[in-house]
Image 1 (cartoon, rainbow, N blue to C red):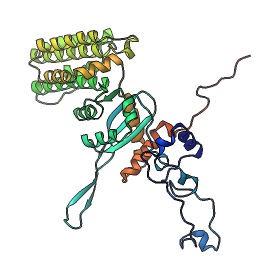
Image 2: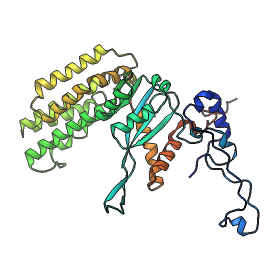
Image 3: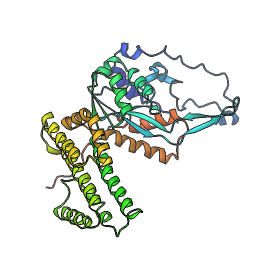
Image 4: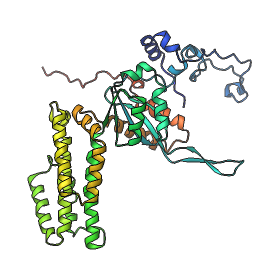
Length: 383
């Protein structure tokens, strides 16, 4: 599949950028292709004795007025728009590809099953680019390949709880603040409660949980947040834990402690302006974190899953506080991943990595989408 920019789109982009910016990193202009003396032998029009038609779809950078346009403007891998908050996330590209080296006879990997994507987290531009793999070096190389003025405009970077992306962002964008995604913090706390419940079930009963087990009947209620849990559900949790205490007091203590610690952490995450509708200070976030750490140190120091969670939150303390204070998440990256994976599934997988990245950005990049008008549904006025 070949993607060619529309003339009016290219004209708008060319007018927005100065001639110095267009030709700064571009090679020499591509010359127009030479006219062939005769059509190829496999041309159906040539076999029919007809002259080749002049109206043929142009490929990117081959013929027509597209040869006068800089090469990087003729592809969806063109210059990235100016963004303020850069989102970095990993994406499952597909299965790994291999080929057998004819000289050594060993299997060599062609493509990684993972790729790193770069998204505009707040501006709405969607997918900006992608690199193969989840290593630190390709991420830094992609960021440093952008113009210095583009990097200077980025004031924040949103990531998941990935130490690799945090190190890459600190090295490539030392002036930007790093934000840890709030959703993944809450997901990690919920997983901790499930792990504590499963471990105690296996210790008490020597098997996996069943519907007849007391702790299993409230496994879904334990995943609800403290602000969304109804009084009836909360009463059911407390009554079930009281009944479980007669069976095994240690298991009840660990499950109750893990659930309470998770609720304290979720209360801290709920201080984000997107939830409260008002500004949040670092002092409020620090007090909420202190309550969480104090409870973990007092009641949960003997629970290994809770200790691990507290250590993880402590290592990401600044990034979590930044995200809660500013109310910015990495949700745009998750939306782009959802859209890109849908394209991969429809195509039943793509073997060529470059074509896959091109198709993903073409469908997830806002500049390639038409401006639909009107933007809102218009209804006829009632007389």
